[in-house]
Image 1 (cartoon, rainbow, N blue to C red):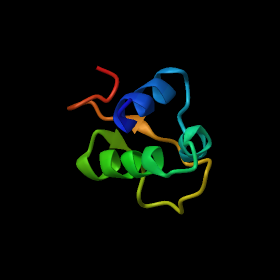
Image 2 (image 1 turned 120 degrees about the horizontal axis):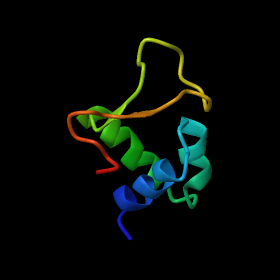
Image 3 (image 1 turned 90 degrees about the horizontal axis):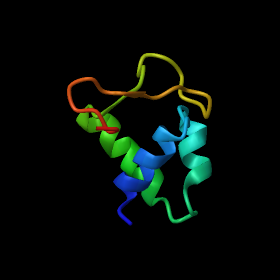
Image 4 (image 1 turned 180 degrees about the horizontal axis):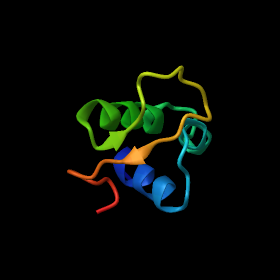
Length: 68
């Protein structure tokens, strides 16, 4: 299953933090990498003006929602 689809499932199941995504990764890094790619592309919103840690919340972009 593609990492983006797994990430959609994590977000749909209530996972909303960077730590939730990292915890759901299978130690290969694909899910974490997909999260950062979707942040870069604007599909996942994160406040990039605050320090990043595992509690940093993620949000689904309104213009191109990951959960659609």
